[in-house]
Length: 128
Image 1 (spheres, rainbow, N blue to C red):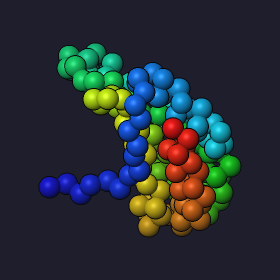
Image 2: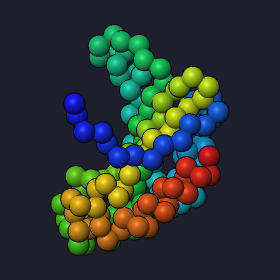
Image 3: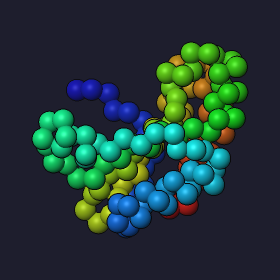
């Protein structure tokens, strides 16, 4: 069985689009920008004609934090940006964020910024 990915999560009793807007607002309040948005629901329908509930991956970046990590380890890009996933579930929307603590073992740059990133990403979930 594959190893589970360590993550932070919260299910909010909000419709998907409302929850997505709240997540983006909370990320921005913590100094993150959303660089990418991947709509898995649309992609799966387009590419393999399969229907799934709403599911979006946001690529969030705190440029100042990322730069500090990059200065220590230029290979840190394989761990960036921070992915924040939202998926429609019964009763609301689940928000999932990969736990930065699980990535610090892979890079000295990530280890340097991990406490601050963890605090900020937990604040995003707390704001929901």
